[in-house]
Length: 150
Image (tube, rainbow, N blue to C red; front, side, top):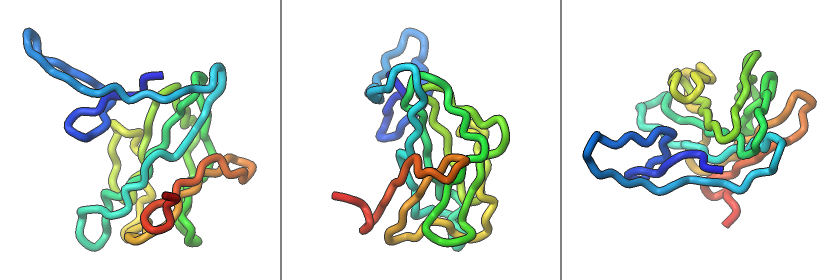
């Protein structure tokens, strides 16, 4: 399944070329489970550029499956207590769709989700993001920094 394009080192969901112009990008694709959703954490941007609050930190979640995934009520959390984000009602990931949950910014083009935290969520050295379903089952875990598996 094609999930995006890589241009200038960034994954984008739209590939626009000027009329009569030339452009190129790499395809971003994943192997999919047919007929089922398959939700994963794919990225943790743990060192933001906004001074003190790192409001631009985010976690990216993708549905690699071929069926929509209703993640209403699922919880995205860090290892520390009080750092949980619960997905609001009607949060459905289409096949191949990527969304981001920012520390304290709202980006509608990435789903518009934010912890709304005035302080950083993600440890700048190492941590893990966990995604749990409504029953508390671990769906995906993404370790980064010195906690990442080589």
